[in-house]
Length: 460
Image (cartoon, rainbow, N blue to C red; front, side, top):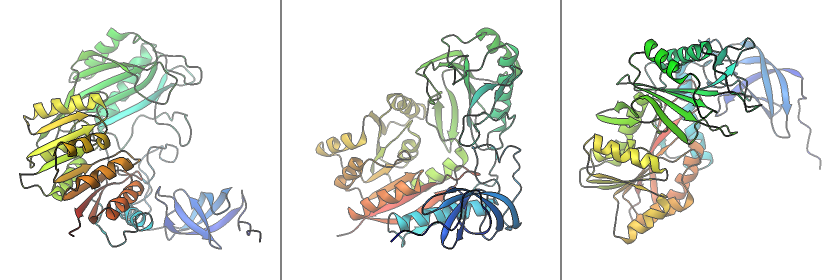
């Protein structure tokens, strides 16, 4: 029997009532059971919607006019919010953002992990959910008059939206980008054009220490030489005498990757510093360092609480990066072994351990799923394993290695609830019980959510 045709057609204008939100924050309304996903729609609202795409089982719409507004609808404070792809949730009250993220975690745990019994706490939010990002990397383009412009890409495109400020960036980052752009423009430095693969300046990156106020500027060019380098350095220093580091990075490849392989410090120090809690970190241009240290402290405090360390434990930190979680754990553990596949990160982790005078944390380059079985054969028996994988989640071989090592507790830090739910199911089937999940709002105004999960080995 032929499947019924969708009840709406492309370019049709309809009245729609929103019932729910997708994980990206789009409104969901149904026409005769057929779901339509509409950006900027909020549950409880009735709106006029234009149907822009029709698929077999669902479609997409464009919000034309809201007839009945939700109490949670707010006016976005950013002038380019509806053009820019950086934020997705500025039209929502902050409480609704936090509730949406908690619900997202609950939904995927139930749907993917079949873990509806697990307690998911209220999302830990920020007192002030603006100006939190300590790192900006922003593409450079040219206006029609030849002046340089900087801004994030328009949604689903590589068109740069000319903007002077971004309300989720640290204010210092904003001012630095604007100043560097103005100086480079006045010196006649050309912007890189990804269509023609010509021009010089590709990206401006600024990193700031939230607690130290250290500033690092990274200028990414396609060219081997940084045009007007000495003049550029002098003028940046004149504008910001407290700048600690100016770095030139060369990226001559046709790629969307921001940083190239060649990095040269052209003024000041190789690193800047910042602190999370009592621990100090060295940050280089390529360091993976959390962009929201305020919320990172909440995240790591919760990881430490779930690890439940009493002073005699051995801990493995897989995906240790520059040692951020490892050093938090080392404050309470007897011994921490950190594993990371990126050699430069391990070098930084060792430096950070020395910087904090911690001699009970060792760091190793390699794949955790290969190192851990070898450690097991050497007699290493961890009490706790902590993982903080990328968005794709844990490698299956790593999950198997964790199950073979049989630690008392596993602490899983995740930036993707879907892969977290998938991996928790595997760990549950392997003999662990998921006790609770704590969502943390690391990226307010966006649809991303971070989680810390506590697992215990089931008693026989």
